[in-house]
Length: 322
Ligand code: AMP
Image (cartoon, rainbow, N blue to C red; front, side, top):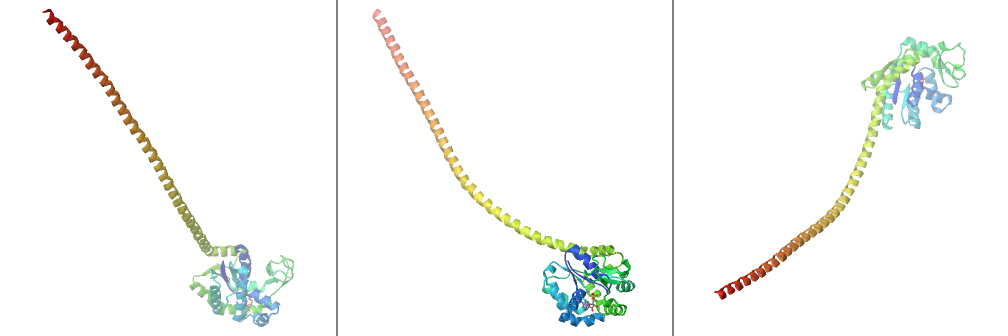
């Protein structure tokens, strides 16, 4: 989730960014908070930025850009960020695009918090901030004007640039320098307009709905990467399977050949035996036939001889009688 929250001072960017960071698990990166922190620590940048902030003017681009660059390259912003209050003019938008391109984290969406000027003024003038935990409260929601923070009991104060005379200046700066960014991001097809009035929950729900397409677009991208990896894995598996199949086929062929050879040998032996047996059978039959025929002929010849002799004898006897 890499988004920018765009909107006038008092449009609720900071409050909603805090709620969204919990849901999406990415940090809120607020240029105003980074500057206020630098001012409080009295760093070189902070000292330079202080006067412009108190006057409701924009701090110079190079100071803000340096802080943003350092913040976005920290570890916790690797999975995304919610930019709140940056960019605030077209030069900053150009520098942001370049920076995000350099770190390979392009912007996914820009949410514009749409709030009427009358509501903005009322919110800014009644804003109270906790010195201890930074929670933002609306004066109208506190039990009494000097009540402590309802979250941690810390002391509440009014930001110096939330004083009426500065509020007007800040709204002017928004109109002249920041509002043109609406057109810029609209042309890029990144802008989503969210109605920023109603209860906190209603506004958060609208923002989540506006972010749903960006979230959905990020998910298939993720699963496409996962799908690619899975496809690689299965193709690797398939190659392994193919190779294994080849080995098995080769082994089977070899074994088959052996079996076939064995079977052929066996069959050859069998048929040889059969042939041998058959021919042996034929031979014995022939021999048997022959042997049965011979004695018969012999006997025939013998008996024929005997009866011939007998007849001769009878004939001889008869001629003697005559
Ligand atoms: P904010 O808390 O966002 O309302 O910012 C408070 C003040 O910090 C602004 O009125 C500016 O003076 C300064 N500031 C915050 N963000 C930027 C920025 N992106 N560029 C220049 N000045 C900024």
